[in-house]
Image (cartoon, rainbow, N blue to C red; front, side, top):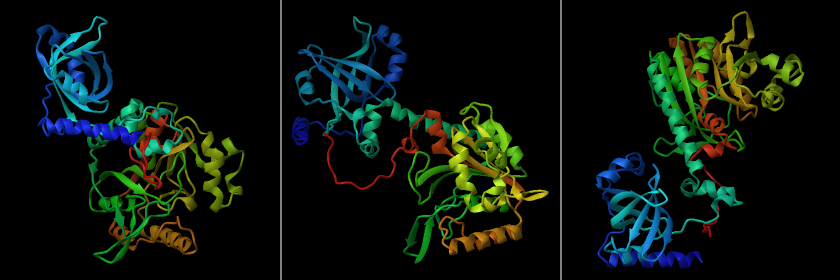
Amino acid sequence: MLDDIIKERKKKLDAIIARGLNPYPARVKRTHTLREARENFEAFSSAQDSVSLVGRVVAFRDQGGVVFCDLNDSTDKLQVVLKKEDLKDFDFIVSVLDIGDFLEVTGMLFATQRGEQSIAATNARVIVKSLRPFPTSWSGLKDIEERYRRRYIDMVLNPEVKEVFLTRSRVVQEIRTLLLNEGFIEVETPVLQPIPGGALAKPFTTHHNALDIDLYLRVSPELYLKRCLVGGMNKVFEFARDFRNEGVDRDHYPEFTMLEFYSAYQDYEGLMDFTEKMLKPYLPGSWERIRYADTFKKYAGRDLKDIPNEQIDEVFKKEVRPKIQEPTFVTHYPKAISPLSKSVEGDPELTERFQVVVEGTEIVNAFSELNDPVDQRERMEEQERQHRAGNEEASRFDGDFVEALEYGMPPAAGLGLGIDRLVQLMTKSKAIKDTIIFPTMRSRDEGDIE
């Protein structure tokens, strides 16, 4: 069935070429977007000025001497009316046109008897011939993975899917503008790193042939951004693509985007104020502040002191975090699970660290940065011992970073914000994969969707 449709469309492609026309021209005639045509409809239609519009044919209704098409150019949708009496190549255009083709039309705007804004075409040509039909039952597909694999189809057929990524783009640009206006500098740090650091996570490994060394896809840009602070860049940020060789679930995906920024002469309390200012427009709520130990009592009825260090984080994730719904700052994390955070003065077993939890999901991790090279060395050495004992998620000892700290890093606070999770919450997406435009999928046998 599908093969027959493709063969028929290829015949139409051949017919266009045989007529001496280019079915894939480099240049098209376009005077306005469809949105501009709609917004200026009264002026255009009353002045009787012709306009040239382009877009994908998303609907096609043949009524003999008149054909109605719905055109979509991603800004809007508009009806095209092709009449045999007005269009010189009417029979040819109708014979080669299919849903999915891109069409260029020139004509005048008018309103139908039902009041629908339309364009009466006096010239038309196919500017992209589509060889594959769009599926007719896409939204109901049981195999949701096909929608991820062919996201380009999903966005065409389901505007709400594309809207998620438009929202994502808007949010990233707004946050970038906020940071730039606050005096931050955007930098780019290595994706391939000799030592994975900055987070507790199992890395992906690769090999650099020219240098003949093993490298890791970064789990975080943190240690390089802090080197920028040592170098005199007092406010830096990066929208970083990070990679962690972990499982896939509602809130986790091995490839994701993290905003990290670091501000010299700032501490975690000032950073909490700034974080609320940055995120409250997207996540309104109470923004309560509660200590990490108190969350165990409030939500799990347990005393943190009774839980072994190696189990603390898992208990928090399973018994505490899911019960936190309103945007909440969870503060004062134990030193044992915070190897890069500065200790609280007077209570060295706690750190000046906070996370933002919303609807049971952690979207921000932040703290006053540890800049004592002696303390940092000891903590990294402990993490290295854990790694060698079999903990694949433990951080590695990074001698170059410790050496950088020995030159002196100013007091600073830093933050990591999960962009995918933020967008997931904003758009009410079911899974983090819904916010990643082209997620990596399992390999499959090549096949076609009927």
